[in-house]
Image 1 (cartoon, rainbow, N blue to C red):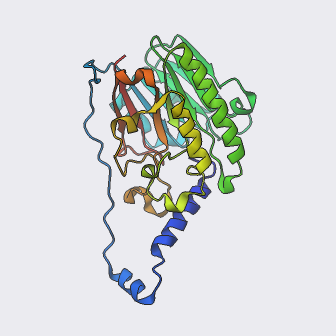
Image 2: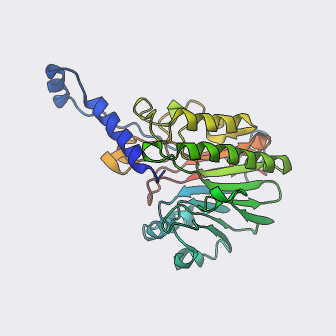
Image 3: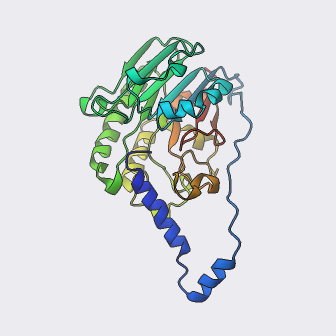
Length: 314
C-alpha cells in the first residue's frame, strides 16, 4: 500500500486525534496519568500441513510486498526467504527495472526460474516478481489491457493443477485521486480472473490494497474515507469473492482479530500492531478442498508489509 501512503497516514493520524480527543479537561488530566494499553498482537499458530480431506501439503507459496526490492535485499529479506523455503516466491512493489535487479536475488540457485514485471513509464514504482523452483508451463504478464499493464502489476504462471497470479493492485491514492481508475481496474481484473478460472482453478496472491471488512484493520472508524477502506474498494473485493473465489485466511480463521500484514511507518504502528490486512491468498472455490493453511509471518522484517504463506495439497 504505497502510492497514496500519505492518505493512509492521514487516516492513522486522524484516528490518533480521535482517540486523544477526550472532551473535557478533567478527562484529559486523567488520560495523562493512565497507563498505556498493551498492544494486542497476533501470534501465527503452528502450520497445518493437512487438507480437510486428509491430503498432505505439497505446495508452499509465499507472497511479500517488499517496498523496494533493492532495499529489501539489503535488509536481509533473502535470509528469511531461504529459511521459509517456499516452492514459489511472489513479490510486489519491487520498484526495480530489469537492469537494476540485485545480483543477490538474480543469482539464487534455489529459484532457477525467475520472472519480473516493471512499470514501463515510471522508475522506482510498482513492479512484481515470481521466483519458482519448478518451471511453470507458461508465464504471461499483465491482464491484456494496456492502461493497466504498463504499470507492471501482474504476473500469471500456469502450473499443472492451477494458475498462480501475483498482483500489486493500484492504490486509490491520497485524496482518492485514483478511485475511479481503481474501480475500472477491479472490474477488468475480475473479468481476467474469471476467464482463467474457466480453464483451471487459480490462486491469486499479493497486495490487493483493500481491507475487506472492519475486522481487517485496527481503526475502521477513522479510515472509511481513506484509500484501502472506501466502500467502493470493499465492494469491488466483495464482487470478486461472489464470482467464485474465496479469501482463504477468512475461510480458515473467520473470527481472528488483530491479524494484519501492513503497518505504516508512522507512530510506531507496527510495535503497537495498528495495522491493516492488505495481503491475501484468494482461491478459486474449487481449490478449497486442497487448502491446508494460510500464515501471516508478522515477525519477518524488511518492509512495511510482512510475508504471507499458503500451504496447498494439490
